[in-house]
Length: 142
View 1 (cartoon, helix red, strand yellow):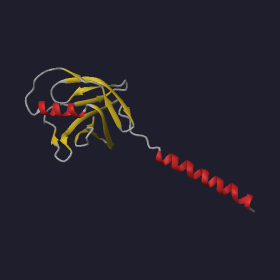
View 2 (cartoon, helix red, strand yellow):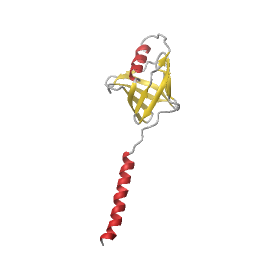
View 3 (cartoon, one colour):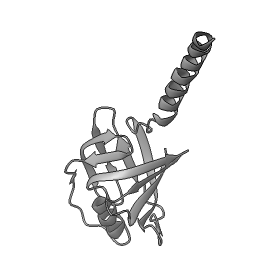
View 4 (cartoon, helix red, strand yellow):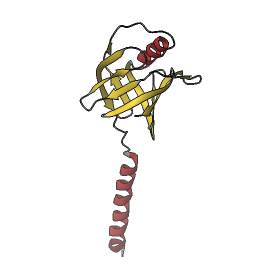
């Protein structure tokens, strides 16, 4: 009798372990080959809307390159993604001066896109948080 019960119980146990492993193995969304437009930036609790009438672009290439324009200057560099973290290599940009609020928007954005940062993706909204978690950039998919 005990042998007849052992096999179904063992199958149930193995099945439960497999299902639990699958459920906890969530994959983060892949940012490669995506384009984003800046919506807002700054402190999490006091976001500033992106400057109106200014085309912005944050482009994650499938080749590990990132680039775009966040208010004034074109920029580019390397990135790597691991789970919900993105590591930005040094970003190189042109050096034009622009009026406010474009310059502040760009400098705050570049400060957030430094080193390893966390991101969340909910539908067509991408949020990138600085290492402290106090400042963020919010983008919409293009």
